Image (cartoon, rainbow, N blue to C red; front, side, top):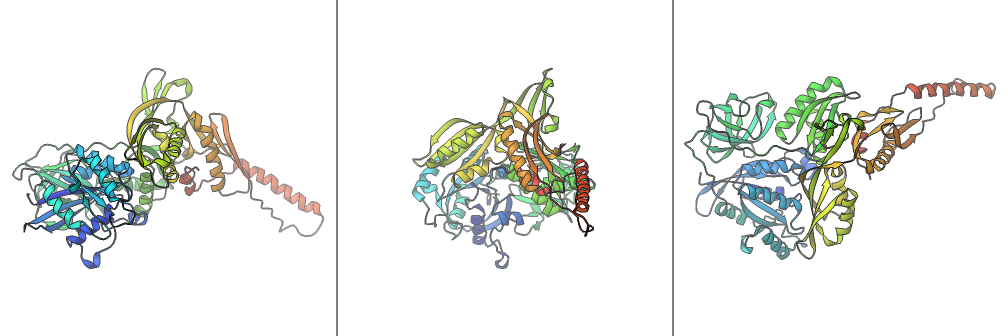
Length: 595
């Protein structure tokens, strides 16, 4: 146990975690030369295309230290985007130390601070690393001062590194051995192993990734999963190297995987404790339950695909524990699921993964947040769907969730960022200068206002120099209305939204304008309207595609042609009366990206 080191790599998005992890793998020769590639631990096509880490990735390395001993390193590379912070919290629960990366060209960002506090809450040993020091724009001394202010470390504790060239990798390896404590635990005690991740394999069933806190986990042991009360045999246990490596046992303090042959994904829960059936141990404190920030309905294009969609979501939930869902029905869309996400990027990634990994074509409804409604009798209910909002006569108060937003930026963008936050009904609570050039702003904002386009707009007005992080901050009373989108007088359920009264007209106009661009033209005129109750607040008209058929009318008097066109015009009037307008799948997400 004294030669085991468990640590994770934490940083803001795009500060070079995956690239530095590649260099650590090269240094320990954990990957064969012919298998090497960039972003080695990012195994999803989606991660490589977007250049971001979506999933935490655990890997075992062997490192011969200068003292002549061989050390086992269990490293977890974590995501940097705020929407995947739950992955980071789970990785931290399985470690004793963390490499805190800061980009020498950008400095400390909002997510850096957030992840650091998360690590300190779990008493992790922090090793500060200043990455990208080989770049011409690197400001080493200024960024080192920022790290000293943030972590309270000494100047000599900071390791200068480069994920691109491999500078500082030997120093990082040495620091991991010397600074990060060996895991504590009782190898002779009852087995206690924490499940920190899992994945579904179509051939082998559910594979659970565990950190053994006490005892030893052996192959062919009868294992009990405490939360679900299930008992299964460990068909295979092993270490998580680049390819899974079967072993006879997982030692106390180490990290590994278990294959049980389980086919039902609901039997294994992330955060559960695994123990022996004949000598059970106590349940470990898991990590906090995930709190979804954004809710949206996901419906199959064909109602026959409801059960396959449920299976797909269950398998995806194994691999992404921050996804929550429950069945719901819609008058227009039939049977589907109400899903909870940590943000808009998370929603986009889940929709993309459903299509790529499970071949599921789905319709996504307008995302919204959880509101609290107090009725006239004083009963409080939570609503996540526009259809659930009671009539004005039956409700006395509506409350919306608030957040505390933390934005770090350079001084030149303060004005435009404050304007954006005030437009989003925000209140400035704190302004701190981290250095003469960098400022930290704290705002209280309604969560509903940051759901759609806040992050994109913040990045564009600050040219990418603003970082953003947020925490929930209770509920506050609001003036909420339900806005419906009508096509030819028919409500489109999937586009209904709960909005603040002051923003209803602006959002309604934007959605109508966007729909006019996205909807295909028909042979009849389409009225696109946004309405609150019976009152229409915005309207756009999609003109008809003129298609007059005169092929069978040849020769003779002009009145023959006129008569034929009048007959067709009457048919088009009738078509408009009965015609149904299909909204293409692409329109559902595009309509939300208002300018």
